[in-house]
Each structure stands twice: as C-alpha cells, then as structure tokens.
Image 1 (cartoon, rainbow, N blue to C red):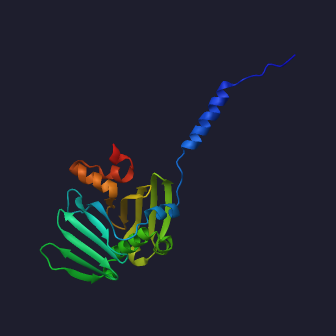
Image 2: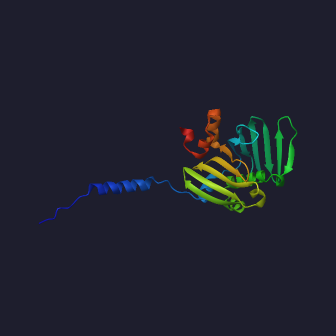
Image 3: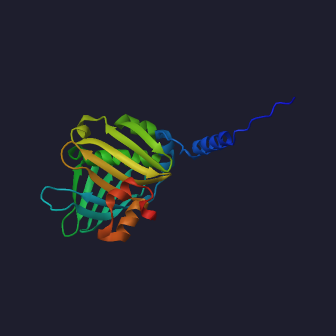
Length: 219
C-alpha cells in the first residue's frame, strides 16, 4: 500500500523567506573598496557646507563654498558665504587670501589640521590606501550604499588636536566628514550631493540627517 507523502507548505515559504532575506542583505565594504571608488584624478572640485561651533556663538556658524584640486599637489578651499576667503595648500605652505586683507602665507607645520587635510584629501582622491595608512589608522564599516570610514591620526602633531575623522558616504560619493577634536565639539562638513541639498534647503536643512542618512536628500 503506497504511503501518502506529507507536504509542508510552510516549509517552502520559510525557505523562500530565508533566501530573500539573504539576498536582500547589503554587501559589506572594506577600506580598499571605499578608497577605490573615491579616487578622482585632478582636476576635481566639490561644493561643501560646514558647520563650525564656538563657545562665542549662540549657534554654529554655517560656511558654504567649494573644495578644488587643480592638480595633484594643490588643494584649494574657497569660502563663498558668509564671507569670502580662499585657502591654497601646496607643498609645505598654505596661503590664505581674505576679502579686504592682504594674503598671508605660512608653513603647514604651524597648522597641523591643514597639513592633515592636505594629506588625507590627496590620498583619498588618489585612491592611495598605503599613503593614507601611513598617516592614519583606518576602520571601515557599513554597506556599499551607506558606509563609514574612520581615520585615527598616527602623527603626534595632528593627534594632539584631532581625535579622529569620520567619513560617511554611499557608493562612490563622499557625503560628509566629521572631525572630532581633542577638545570642543565635532565639526561637520557636508560634501557633494549632501552639500547641494543643504544649500538648496537653506536654513531648513537638517545637516546631521544629510550627513548620517544617505537617503535624506532624496526625501
């Protein structure tokens, strides 16, 4: 007498759900994957919006402008609002030109933050993981559409003023840089699409959401 075969319809549903769940998991990233996609040959430029806190201010100062890298040895930071100022970093020197004042040039050894900015931006845009690893300890986390890269300074001169730098982005887009100083409040800089969204939204922009949530600008 043939034995009736039992069927378990819920077993198939469970297997399908597990398969879909596994397929829906976002692909993890490592620092090499991120750096490979952030690489940009010079010349390159991107808008930025920066919030700078101070004990003397009731609210953080919002600064708008553009970062530019005209060649591999030069980084330009052009502030357009609420004042006009251009900082050009090349080699071991930085020159600051502000509207209504004479330009001043000084050695980067006097400004380790600018030296770190030049080194990190240069390595990021070149996709040079080895150079970045010499200057920073690197830790990556997240998924391809929502990743985080934390840089911890190795150089004593920079480490005395900067605790760490957190880069946030999605895919090949670096959207935000959060610099955490040894003393004081973190400084947040929005870039690329996040900066354009903040500029478009003006005072209503939620800078933290644009920095931390890769889908905020699309909503």
